Amino acid sequence: MKKIPCFAFTLLALACLLSTETNSTANAAESTVADQKYNVLFIISDDLTSTALSCYGNKVCHTPNIDRIAARGTRFTRTYCQGTYCGPSRASFMSGYYPHATGVLGYKSPRPQIGDRATWSQHFKNNGYYAARVSKIFHMGVPGGIEDGGHGADDEASWSERFNSGGPEWKAPGDGETLENNPDGKKPAVGGNTFVVVEADGDDMVHSDGKTAAKAVELIDKHKDEPFWLGVGFVRPHVPFVAPRSYYPPFKPYNKMLLPEKVDGDWDDIPKAGINYKTSVNMKMDIRRQKKAVGGYYASVAFMDAQVGKVLNALNKAGLDDKTIVIFTSDHGYHLGEHDFWAKVSLRDESSGVPLIISVPGKQPAVCNSLTELLDLYPTISRLCGLEVPERLQGKDISAMLDDPTAQVRDTAFSVAPARKGFLLRENRYAYIQYKEDASAGIELFDTQQDPQQYTNLAAQSEHKPLVDRFKAKLAAKLATVRNNDLGRN
Image 1 (tube, helix red, strand yellow):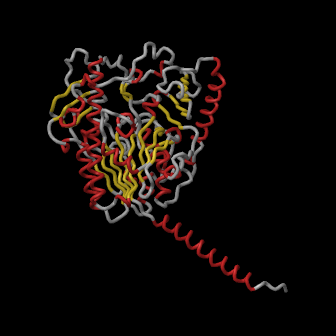
Image 2 (cartoon, rainbow, N blue to C red):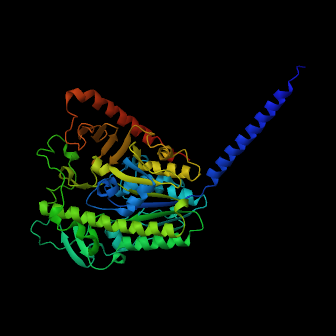
Image 3 (tube, rainbow, N blue to C red):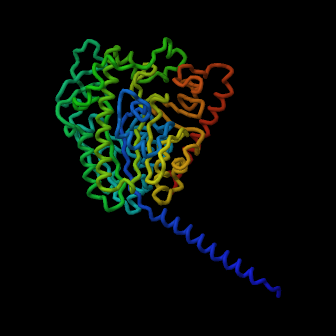
């Protein structure tokens, strides 16, 4: 038998010791991650464009409380929703599936399609978290559902508790004006999905969002000693644009509001399906009304931001800043006159893009310009909290971006506008929009490096035919992948 020198035994022992210490350290680190019970505070605003936020560059509408989240977190500049109106978007990020995987293309709960599969908040509830929502997380009609105070298309199984926040909406006492389809000014303030501005009497607590903030503050204090997943759904700035009077002065007189550039013939090179459902033309809004719409929208954003501040203050008072992941986002974006379009539904960046800020204790603030989707929240936040990430989820884990904002996990973002049978493939450079799966209702192609405002549709130009063909094939493959899910299997 070959003899091993004495010093070799020493090196061998040292190696074993180092290996044991390394494994112990690694196991301890894994245990720390696994045992970490970060709280999750998910704040979502309704119908919010990132361009209305000061942390995204707005110089007129100041949002100091949302800016507080951005100052501590990662602000994502290229996040896209999966459906450009409330119902399909919310059903998607809460269920973990694209709209065309579940078939939830409207304003319904995804529960019949997903069966006993856990939604995002339910996954946390199943892992020992108190899970609650205040107001609108799944779809809830605004203003009708807020006036009624009901659950809307909510999913009861997703929550330990759920709370609604009723409010008067367009009926709030104050000075109201209907801006849409009211050229002679004779129509009083009206309800429904209508552009109405109400400078309301009374304080924040008259309105749904004031009540939502108060309930969230109460729940944070009540559940501060246990892990929680708290969804706080603010309904502003969804129409009607209603806020207490005190939020309006910075935006008055309304004629000082600036409107986006208007280009003659802007719609001439896009298909009929690409013209949004609300435009300055079909809403009969003259320049005065357009400027007031922007001012009313900004006042609603400022009001919502103040409610965000109340919730953040409660988190701080409870000593939970360093124990809570805070997320701020919206269900989709919003047009404020770009291309003479208003509201949502369009697949242009203004409507399909959303603000997204994720603040994780101990991680450095950053700005991330990589493509992301709202669908990525479920797997990412599960990973950050040490929970198993279900393999069935169709989103991607983007947690690496919180340490390295230059990291990329996808080369394309995917969004849909079901009512228009529209599909968006958004790459770093190009935005490709196709109407109907066979493209029979038209195509739009924009080079967003050369044309960031998306004024020139390149789809019909012969030199771009190979690019269009590539996108057609890519969309067909994406839809096939989306639909090849586990929902039809036990």
